[in-house]
Image (tube, rainbow, N blue to C red; front, side, top):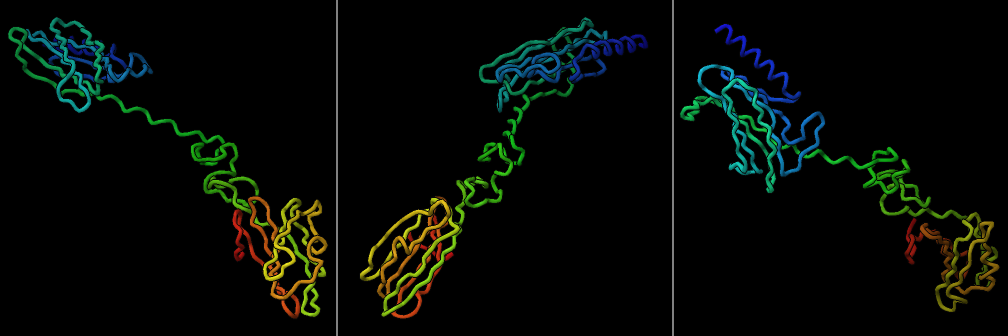
Length: 307
């Protein structure tokens, strides 16, 4: 008996030494088996994942007692959600020989898991005497997709970053109006406000108003200026010009040398693409200087609003 226990222990050590690094062991008193824990990959360290239709059970079994009984490993392969195996095979051993169980299985409907059952049986009548708890190995879930790249390291991946090579541009970044850049990836650059200074001086005589000075300065060169007149007997309806290279334009010299009747509205509009325009509105009256009202003109609109 002592010799038998020593021999059994030696056999188990030999088999364990031949097992792969990732293995499950069955070690009852009557037998020994090891099962590769990665049947859904090719053999060897870092083996490639097998196609969804394949599984490759690997390992070996061996009887470890001289008692006229044999050991059996039953391997079953299953599709997802199906209790009926699509493949079943058995490996028996009773001569104290290391018998491999390796067999590559394929099923067109896919193989989701494989089950290993290690039992002791009577070879004379096939009666199963005892079995170890079955081992079931499922196909590993696919690895998560790699996160999208963030080339500028601003925390916003390229899938949502409208300029992924500029770390100052990303969703939620401070938007700088009028810089020509969609800083916050909201769909376009926020319009900036045009800057300009208007100098005006009026003279009222005999119920007529005349501009002595109407000069726009410190404005963006090339910006559009439009002068509108509303009311009865306006000398014109609309006249337009542009800001010169110095950033100014003399509107009196261009348009308003004439005397204006009372109750006319003179509107000076300064606009530029993707900018909030400036509007200066004057109302002529019978006596006194026309009062001025400052308004803003959002891009794409014709009606001025409060600033």
